[in-house]
Length: 298
Image 1 (cartoon, one colour):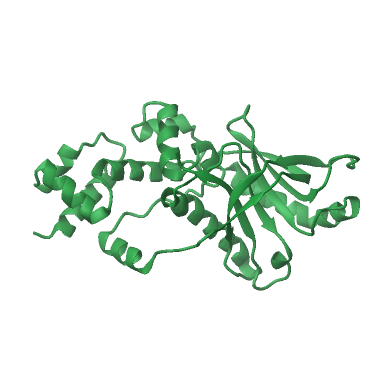
Image 2 (cartoon, rainbow, N blue to C red):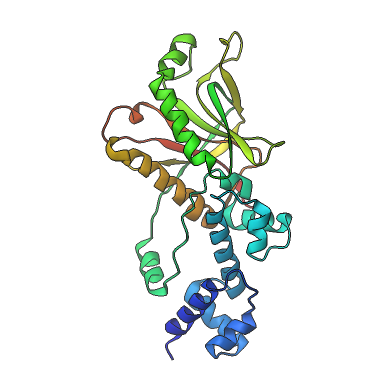
């Protein structure tokens, strides 16, 4: 019997029914196996127990839906989670961060169907591998400009427009002329708003030693001390948006692939940020760093 072909049919069956009730017994019967034998074969082919696999695929599709305007509860109910709390627990266990934290970075990319033949090649070749470095940083004070945006897809148009405005108005020079920043580097930080779970602040700014005597019109943010996983984008040119695509690809990898298998969770109360330094200047071979606050999973 070709076990790979049988389990591939089961994977396709699951994919077509992610919003419907599914049981291991139903899937075993579909494949013509006893339940015990199905459990063994399925895990040997995919590396996961069957219902863990179903839950992960539901969460992957739910994660893609987060880029839209629907509420998290509506998305959770669609994929068989009865409460927001249950959805949050399952999502954090798999992805290492809450749905609200993930939604800031959601791209709307629909997960490809799992192909066991491709999966084997992917695993043998190591897949896409970006190994972070880990650093611990003290509190960081930022002064600059803040945008309040909503986690319903608006952020994906508003933040790029905010950066364009920042660049067109030469606000970088303004910050360096008005302040005495710690370094040349610029930050793009995502700050959660506990009282407004559907919104967050995106702050573009520079690091300062103190908030004393800041000029009027500037916003501030405090990034708490944390241990960070630091990812560096692949070198890319500015032309035709290649640098932006490199950053987006890295972000999709970090939040979609690295977290679920890393053994780390997004640190409670942490703030993730982008760091643009001298490597981000010019027109060719540009790079930047993404700092993600992490802690070991419990």
